[in-house]
Length: 116
Image 1 (spheres, one colour):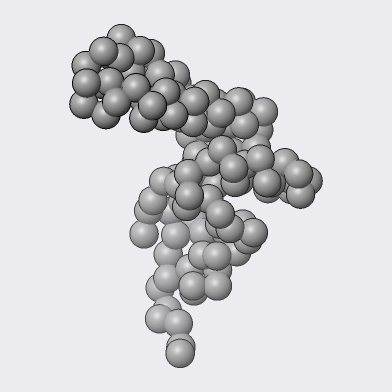
Image 2: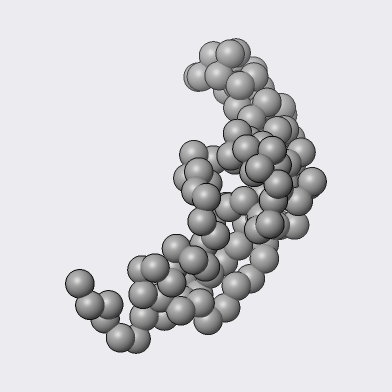
């Protein structure tokens, strides 16, 4: 199995972990590291590839493009929604740039079925 996810960086202080949860997507709300979750599901992580820098570039691109097409997007979504989405992305850039969030591809294997 291979997947890319956004998750809190490891070893964060509780206050920094809360910031990562507040500014990250809903799916980041976990206390256990991704490797631990995969192991609990019977997977062994074969590879972990960090795409955090590319994620920051993507976030900046979203902000730039939404500003470029702001009037059209406001017609579709409304000004409040556009402002909220832009604010969320800026917050995500701050915490990702501060090292609190990561975007990682995990490649995992479960050769032996886990007994239930």
